[in-house]
Image (cartoon, rainbow, N blue to C red; front, side, top):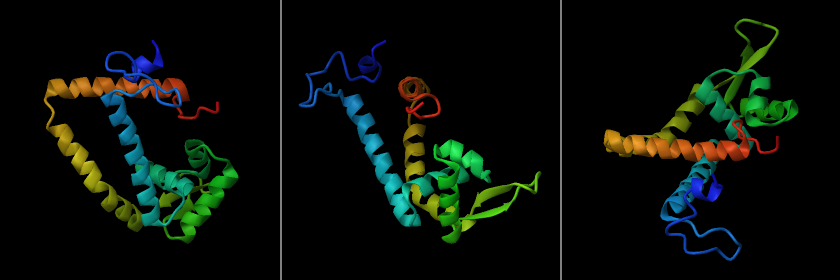
Length: 171
């Protein structure tokens, strides 16, 4: 299946091409693009609020989602070197956003965990967005929710096809 069709940027309603050769987006493709732009803006806002850079925010996001992680796992998830992860964790610890502690099962290793205050600050910034999306989702009928879920699953599959499941097109 052609990627243009998978993303809804080809077929009925496509007027032509942009000056740079991209297909003119359908209304759905335009909304997906806008969500992508707003997601990036929200991440930038959160980084400014926490006073961290993009990589440090990615590390914090993984810590907030998963809890304590070993630096090697953080490096793998963020897609940076062990040295870059060490620098990121050093900055987060210095700013009070994270702490290092011995691994609970292997005291020779360490884990990094997010500071509760920083998690609380991030959650307070994110909850209006999360709550709003949850409210909009709750207003869908079961039938409509299944259609939206199916559509979004197919969009995710296109991204994974292009980037790989780990989100790294550099493979």
